[in-house]
Image (cartoon, rainbow, N blue to C red):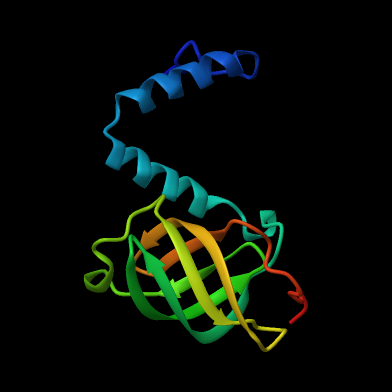
Length: 139
């Protein structure tokens, strides 16, 4: 069985165009799933900042509704919030969020804003709008 004509080192543009064309034909839900799968395949070493395991309560507001939850892990750029699907049916990828929690290193309450970047069986992934200051990256 031979490779399709667009496969080869010299045809990167053709491969990219073919992928782009296929993606454009997919429903939005399938695109979101594919994006999540591709992001999950990325090596953790490609992160700019390591995650730090951190179990702490967090209050967050999404779409003008207040939620209580627990942080599973945190980095200067975001966090993962433990959440059940039943409790978060009104939360979607791309939604802005306001979070209030105890800073892991400064030991004081902080209020930060961000966006929901992931929602799956692990919980809700949040990307902060600004780096969390005074964050020690050593364990």
